[in-house]
Length: 152
Image (cartoon, rainbow, N blue to C red):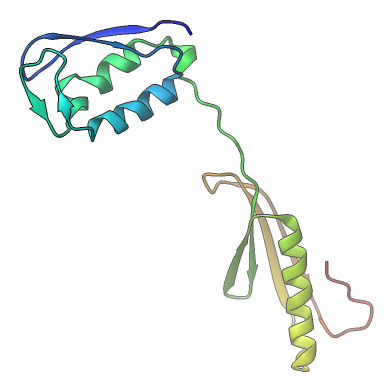
């Protein structure tokens, strides 16, 4: 593994602390800071024991980002497809397109069983992992009980 040593000064005792991040990515190193922050241990200098707070004492939120080049800090945003269906005033969320199809088929079947016919505006939105709309379709289904209407 590649060695990546960072050196910082403990704000509590003033001694130098050297940390080997080995082959950790930027995201892994920042996650590690959260984990170690809650770890009870003694400072490597041996002058004090703390139940946590290492991010503050060792300035980890500053020294770790400084140990990585700008291109190493870029994280890949994975898009997780999600779908939001709005029928009238009700909103439903799905993670797979099959769920959308099953929902609309079930919705139409429920209306048929109740012998109800109504105009329904169906809005389908494909969202990324942060909720931003990637694609939107809006359709009006005029009569769910009319012959020849197929949903799915």
